[in-house]
Amino acid sequence: MIHPQKNSLIHWFFHHYILWIVGRNFHEVKFDHTVIAKDRAVLLLANHFSWWDGFLMYYLNYKLLGKKFHVMILEDTARQISFFKYMGAFSVNKNSRDMMASLDYAAGLLNDPQNMLLVFPQGKLYSNFTDKMVFQKGLMKILSGVQNNFQLMFAATFIEHFKYKKPSVNVYLKTLSESLTYKDINELATAYQQHYNSAKQLQTQIVL
Amino acid sequence: MRWWMGRRFKEVNILPFEPRKGHSVLLLTNHFSWWDGFFANYTAFTNLKRRLYIMMQHNHFVKHWYFKYWGAFSMKKGSRDMLESLTYSAGLLNDPENLVTIFPQGKLCSNHITYIHVEKGIERLIKQISGPCQIVYQCTLIDYFEGLKPRAYIHQFDCGVAGKVPFEELKLRINDFHQQALKNQVNIPH
View 1 (cartoon, rainbow over the protein chains, first blue to last red):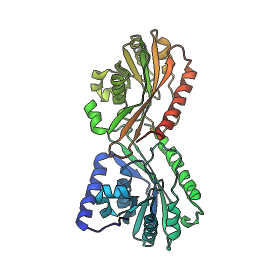
View 2: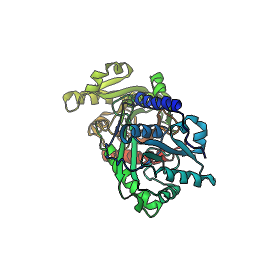
View 3: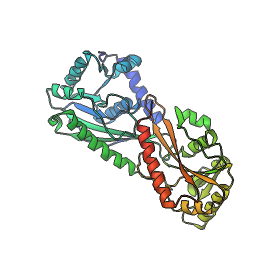
């Protein structure tokens, strides 16, 4: 498992780099201004359809949540792009014993109210036109390992051009208070699916 | 235009499609972005191999006047001018070397919509075509996958020959093909 590492200089550089490339590549990034409890960590579950997802959620955390950013990524990706670990990324290897260590580490992060943990529960990249969200089971292991109460948050992201040359991003957010009541992964996936469906409906109602 | 698209898109993929020989092409395409005319230009040149004409809303045409040099002509909805535009389009489609692109929705909609509205003017236009003309529905979908630049996937479908497909049937076919494109997109290799 690759752990997050601290380096203020690298972090400072890539923090500004991420904000810069998001600003440069998109016409605008819109998100719901939901209220976040300051005394609880945030577990953010997001759809995964592009390399932008991590950067956009980093941007969202900076603009809205103001927590310490952490993200669970595939080990291959963590090795390929080495600066991710300085921005709060840690790795998970789906087919190894190491996976349990990653899930325990993730659960541990949620005990600190200053942290925000981003997880892509689909486990790999899917098309942005996917209707059905399939969740990996490991997520339940994270939820069951958390001691303190945390804030569960769903994000459904869509990127579209409309009348501009550069695309715009819409991130539909939903916070849930009853985060620990999900009995199994299917129940959690269903709750996310409902949010995703309503977000998609809102997105398709945009007409210019 | 190619340079401009190349700069903004990682790739533009046209899924396999062969147009009918000896037919002009009425290209009905989904309208979701500023780039739609560019995609039409790309397919007209790459696989449909016809001379491109494109119908634009009058206000867009005035704003982007330079598109007239790439085959764009204007259409003002709800005016006499509209009938003239439709007649002009039909005239173009009598020549099998030509391709006319029209956005049947008549406005910009999300790329994620599941229903394609087809404006009535299309029926009027098709009735006026006298030469052999193939109607093609083109559905362009944008995905990102492993990359920072978007990738365009162009799905094309044969809706039949003008004059032989009733308008209601055409609307059904377009929506069936749109659903098929969305399904195919989910399973697209990347």
